[in-house]
Length: 320
Ligand SMILES: [Zn+2]
Image (tube, rainbow, N blue to C red; front, side):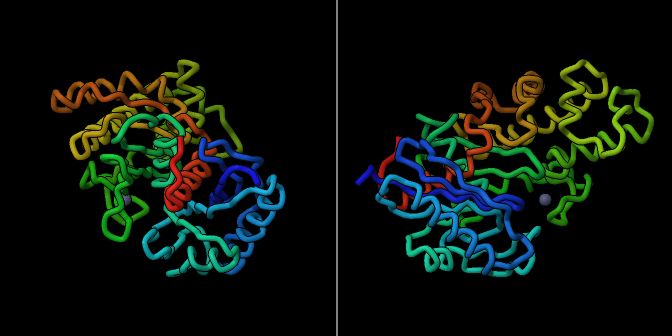
């Protein structure tokens, strides 16, 4: 029999992925399918069970300790209940953990995707070796997870770490949560895309005016900024400012040893680092200013790595 392993499952709005994982964080071949987001919970549970069976069958007779499942939220990791999945149809208070456990015959650990990613970076990525960190993912939205004094912060219903909904501007733009001026509404990739389209529509001179046939996105802003386009450079500077301001609050709240930035927008961290550092230097209390802000290390596999870390923790098997 091979070494103990877990099966990591990453449930996303468009793709569902699974892989065998060892205590060193190494993933086996990744199996994937298109998420049946319109088919309701039963269909998605059947998809998960089928992928888990495939992964087991392809492994070298692994001793599977359990399944780690990273899912969008909001969800309660203690009861294993997904409250709702905004981009899925028919999901309302679904006992996802127990449904998957029944369908696979394996113990299941359910965690929200951002918290799971924080676990992944902590155990296997850019957060190795520290006891306290804040992980922030900046992509469609802004999500996060907080590791403090050697454990993932959960709070009531396991909902701690929704960093994207810190309100930075009380009268700012509307957020998906219904509020105004959340960090997510100001600095997510979606927000950056909205802002650049507004600026272009108002006639701002930019190489991005030549983009036709599709909406201009945050990714275009990064590409333009790298090429020295003045609008791209200015918008990334504004993005860095808002990221820096949000990070200052996280430093003051949690006193992490490290802040880890992941998600699509963080691929431009090299361009934004001076702007983020300037906000921290100006706004953070002196003892907090030396905390490094670093790029996430695990890229697109962070969900699977985090799910694996959760499953090993539940099985009380140490990872390295
Ligand atoms: Zn919000």
